[in-house]
Image 1 (spheres, each protein chain N blue to C red):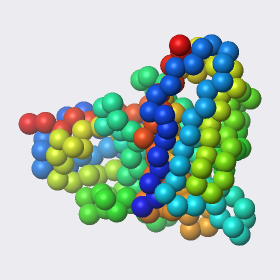
Image 2 (image 1 turned 60 degrees about the horizontal axis):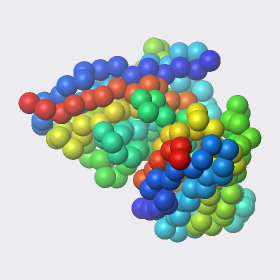
Image 3 (image 1 turned 120 degrees about the vertical axis):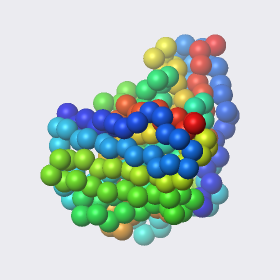
Length: 123
Length: 114
């Protein structure tokens, strides 16, 4: 059974960089059939797609966040990571990693999700 | 961006009764070349991550009870729970994947027991 687990600091200071890692077990991120994505959810609010990465390093990011987002992979560890720079209180959210099905040149839906990790931006 | 609008924001349904959730996209998410609607539905229970229920607007994910069904085409979609069970209390989200940049979700519909 595929499992995803987010890890990283739960508290980040304003203007600093948020860094999270997602570890995949029960499968490989090097599968040609999937992208691997990050989605966030501010407390009590809805879902926002942040970005997704293919094992080869190809990425898509939400244009609203693109200038601040870096997503990378470490296929040797079956991990992918998110860095979000210059954070503010508005970036406080539960951050989820998820597996994403794909078509040719297009990303589809998320079929496996991690449990999520709350990141609070505060001094 | 394709805006996804869900209605209602919340609804209360008696056990065993039908629950209907609507999702409208700001432009058609039906690809004419393959006649597929690029829409997914998720269920999120308190303190849990979202769970995929439906994709391609009407294809049920493996293991999802038959009481959950998706319908609609173009810009108007519906998630129906035919006979509400206590374990169906959750927030439900739609997501379009017709346009990758960006992928967008609806605002969510909270389903409660009346």
